[in-house]
Length: 329
Image 1 (cartoon, rainbow, N blue to C red):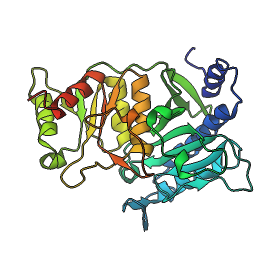
Image 2: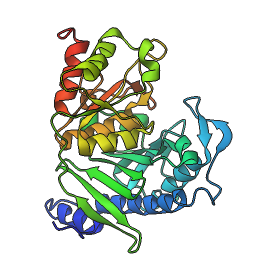
Image 3: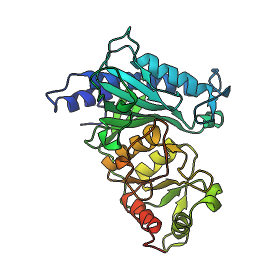
Image 4: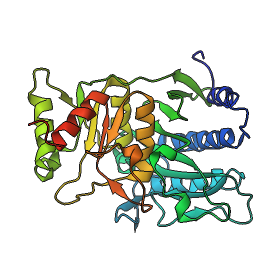
């Protein structure tokens, strides 16, 4: 493929490698790209449009819901629920699953998503993003919770859209991770990063060190080594998962959000954040772990399950695991 290849053309070329493909999946990715363009448009005029600030309510996680969260959640549902490609959806912003209404045709896929990761940062013009993941429906009848409670390795597709100095969509279907940058003059996502490869070891670490004293001792020792080793790592922490992950994916490094004494299971959601990004990073040659197991192997037992997350360059994640297992001091 050449730079200038549109997202739609790239998806169609991939689909042609699978004669059994029906086109549903291709259409679904196209729908998501349309939602991304609309969200990007509103993010880019956030200081002028009424999409900044909080709504006054809290979500299932006890977090204040931002206006942008609510807008993006509703937009993704409206863009995808009537097309006949989905059986149901689940979102970080919704308490329960969203079965496709009976008035619409139903398809064979399940969509889970975080509509806007880092939405509180929009007020200060910091990069934010949308994370998504697609699974095949398991049940033969109406969609149930069991259709959503999957391991990451069951994902058909995963990716994210980052809204920053430019808008970029990165996704994988298991044949490498590929990035597309939105050309606003054309209104098209164009191939800009084919077969992304994360360096085996990085130079950066991304962590909220305000929680340092709450972390388990092995994690503290790992971070201390990164700072004090013969080739010290530089700290880079934005506070938007997608933005921190995207930088490390391209430059190399490790993002860590461990469990701590206050939140032993961590704060990041397995289905909506950890598993999709784990799929992307593995396909780029990296790794993702909860400290002892690959994120992609973790079974989901509830919709809003949390997990510690260590994700990025393969050798950095492996070193972290050695500290957690007591093999490094």
